Image (cartoon, rainbow, N blue to C red; front, side):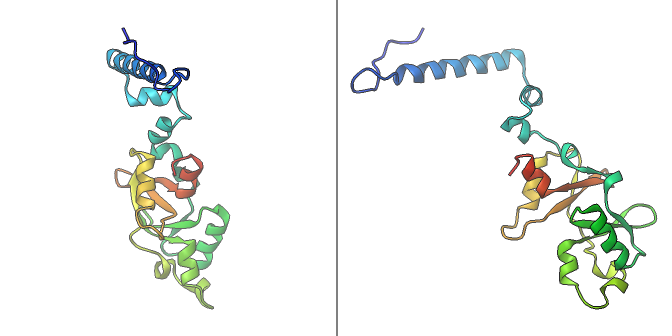
Length: 183
């Protein structure tokens, strides 16, 4: 039973105290039911996929570009092939792999701009690529990917390679995270 308390409104007309008590009672009932039913955050995500909780619980796998759609270039290739792949896939980077499909590096649009010269097309991709691309495991939350990509203010990373137990599984882009409402 809620106590009978006067409203905070100086005229006693606007429902102030009573509405606050009802909100508190509603919250108490909701939390009580949550505990009684044993609802998990994952279940909330199912019931509220478009809400903030659903966004916060979105996984990297849900937002990543799958392996089959990635811009992959062999480490023995020249830059002309990498630039064609970069343009064809339009994802902002190309991933350099070896004959076994293992990641050797990455070339981003920014790398391309920094290395632009008259002989760029004839250079090997290994001369341009960054050899330590940032990665994230596919089982992690997408907000963790956002945190990694934005950890250095003024120098955001545009994408992360998504790994599955050490193997390339996909790519997650900051642009896709923003479109999903994570930033």
